[in-house]
Length: 156
Image 1: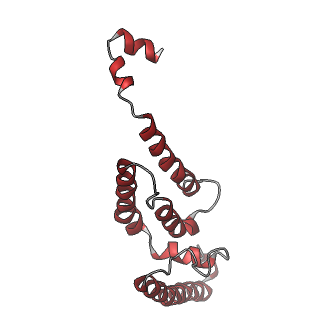
Image 2 (image 1 turned 45 degrees about the horizontal axis):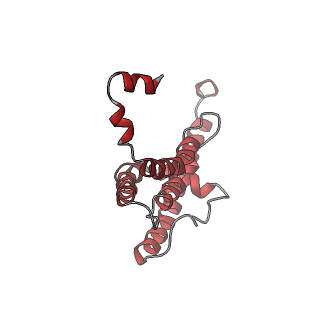
Image 3 (image 1 turned 180 degrees about the horizontal axis):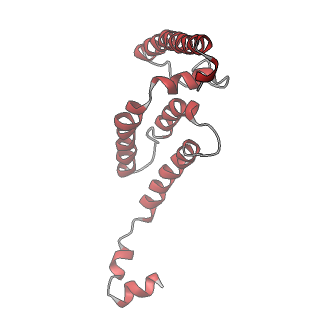
């Protein structure tokens, strides 16, 4: 039906201009990240612990691939930049704590250690995680103490 509409309206030249190889490359790039976003969008199971590792997984999947077109390489580069601008800035302390508390990610091995600043970031993050967790535990402890000392009917 779609082809008939194109030929009937003298738009067949649009089909002829399609670069099938480029379309295939771009489809492969988008398919490679689709599963990651779907995992983050689950509504029936927790995903908070997946946010930080997913950023690094996406960055890895969006690295340049030898032999692909300049257009696809540029597309990957722009997606990586978008991930840095939007995704990275949305990762908060509770995402890092959730990853740290998950036994799968506790060692934070998903953080690359290839550059000096990567190593420093991980060291600083581990110190921050200790501080964040202690702060949260102290807040919960204080809340429990406050509730324990209040009259019986005042809980919740």
